[in-house]
Length: 116
Image 1: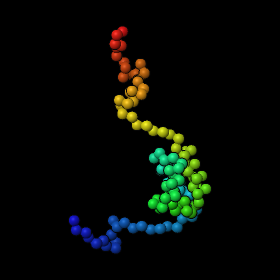
Image 2 (image 1 turned 30 degrees about the vertical axis):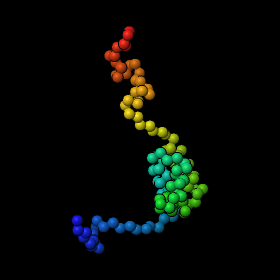
Image 3 (image 1 turned 120 degrees about the vertical axis):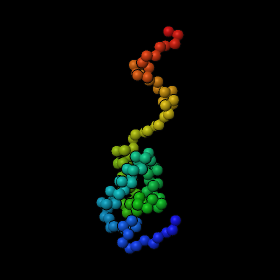
Image 4 (image 1 turned 45 degrees about the vertical axis):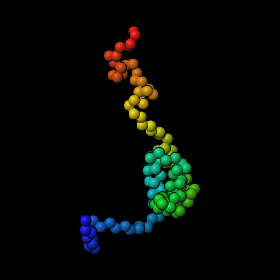
């Protein structure tokens, strides 16, 4: 496929800009990063490493601007709000082996005991 040069007024051209942000905006941004990663299952140590890693430019910029103490406070608040749930996905066979359905459930209704 031939590459066409973009024109200056092309609305589909990606343009990045840097906007000035005060401490409150940085704090809000840090909350957004922390909440997103907490909801993906990250723990306290993993979250702090995201903020300390320059690869994650936005989170690392917030870490540099706010300091580690403020980032740890944000992490704790997000963990308290979102991070106390554990999700475990089981296949149907695993789920039935772990916990059989109660006797009155539709899955067991109409079944007869063998040898009874």
